[in-house]
Image (tube, rainbow, N blue to C red; front, side):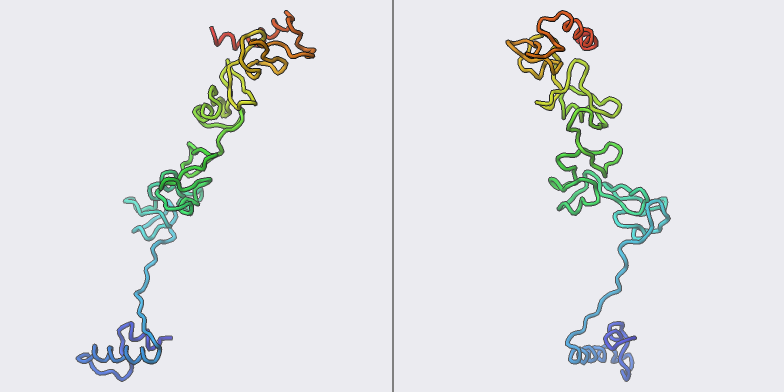
Length: 242
């Protein structure tokens, strides 16, 4: 139903108004009258929707036909803005690494991300997915964890490679739980500084060399059999040093 305020805001005079020659005067009077009755008269311009419902890849004529954070390409299809990537169903554009931001909320559609130094970036315990710039994946923390690149493993464990999607120590090294790193392997009677350098748990570093721990039945100190067995098991490692 059209109210007096709507009629005046639309430029249509109240019933009984005179002709156009005094139209503006009548309209000013009607505004004053309505202000006296209602206390205020506010006119609003019609609002054009800023965004439409056209998904990524769907047809469009102008930018406002597309979903938020998207634009209408020359080919007349919607595409995500820079630093945004389409969702799997193309129904929204997701923030990606490098997007300018003012707070963490601006990066909320990006998985495991925060706003750091004015741009969206992965949280500390995460790294960017090389296949999806809108996704941050957990950083490798234990040898055998999943990886995408060798540098991820090297950052976490030093002397390590990404092999078949898993972090592995290089051939001449093994993972030491006490350090969380890949350390150079020391065989029986090899020189050492710490016990974690010795390749087998039955060895310990004593007097500067890897020797059998006291009471270890499978590793008798000075045992030629144990020494030869270790050499055979570590032949691939030895070949790496030649």
